[in-house]
Length: 127
Image 1 (spheres, rainbow, N blue to C red):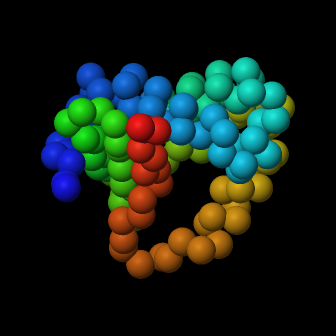
Image 2 (image 1 turned 135 degrees about the vertical axis):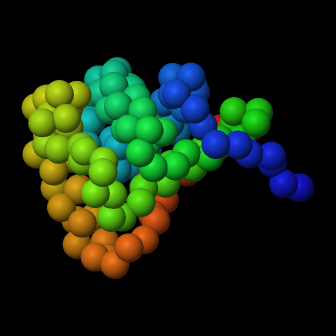
Image 3 (image 1 turned 90 degrees about the horizontal axis):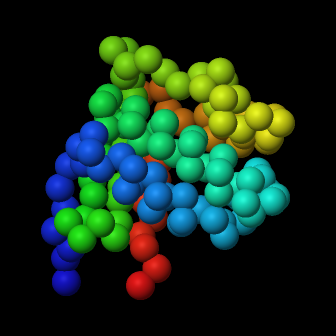
């Protein structure tokens, strides 16, 4: 059975950010990034709201019509889009910035320089 999807719009950002925040709450990598669960929820909500808003504007976000699944796609290169920087990251991560930078550095090592799309986030609601 296939779930119908549509492209996300600006009005969907809050719902998508909440879905993503809930999905990463128990993720081992997210737990390593921010050990305290309350702080993790707060940090990831702000960070993911910013990233999803950026993705809706510049890249592509698919969402299930029933709002239980989302796929956030980044496009490379994106010369017209302002890239999210360490400044943006530090706005939400605070003292946890070094671990987020370490994770991003590791991910960049595997990213191709050729034009491509990559799936940044793809959680589904726990049913």
